[in-house]
Length: 165
Ligand code: AR6
Image 1 (cartoon, protein in one colour):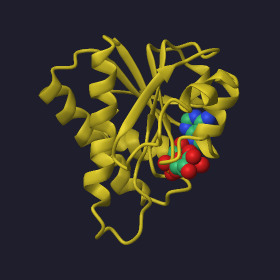
Image 2 (cartoon, rainbow, N blue to C red):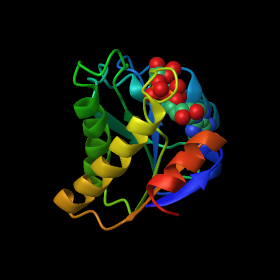
Image 3 (cartoon, rainbow, N blue to C red):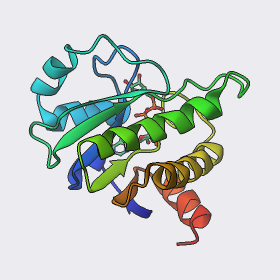
Image 4 (cartoon, protein in one colour):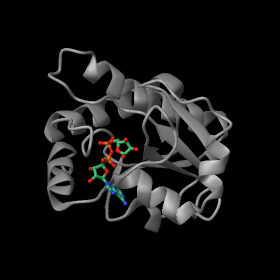
C-alpha cells in the first residue's frame, strides 16, 4: 500500500473512494471535495441509489474527475467503540475493494474513512484501514495498486509509522 499526501481529487486512479453518509446526497469533508471536482452529475447519478448502509458502498461514474469510477463508502459514526465500529469500518474498506474488483479496476485511492466528521480515533482507524485492506486484497485476490491519501500531516505521519515507510 502506498501513502500519498494531499487532496484526493488531485490524484489519478481507476477508482477514487469518498467517505459518504447513508443518504448519499453529498456532504462535507472529502465528500465535498469529490463532488465539487466531479461536477453536479455525480449527485444526479447517486439519485439512482436509495441510500447506502453503514459498512457498505456504492459505485458510480467519476464524471470530471481523473478517474473511471467513484466508490461512495459509508464508514461508521464513532460512538464509544462498542457499537461494531471496527467491524463496520473494516467492512467499508472491503466492500470498496470488492466493487473496484467487479469493474476490473487496477488502482484505488482511499481517504481515511470515518476519521473526520465521524470522529473515529485516528490511530485506531488507520490500523483498521491497513489491516482490512490487506485482508480484503488477499481474500478477494485483488492485485491492483492501493494508495491511502492523507489530507493532513498527522494522518500522514501516523500511517507512515504504521507501514514503516
Ligand atoms: N482529500 C483527502 N482527504 C480529505 C479531503 C480531501 N480533499 N478532505 C478531507 N479529507 P470526512 P468521515 C480527510 O469528514 O469522517 C461528510 O460530510 C479528512 O481530513 O470527510 O468519514 C460525509 O457526507 C479525514 O482524514 O469523512 C459524511 O456525512 C478523512 O478525509 C461524513 O462527512 C475523512 O473525513 C463522513 O465522515
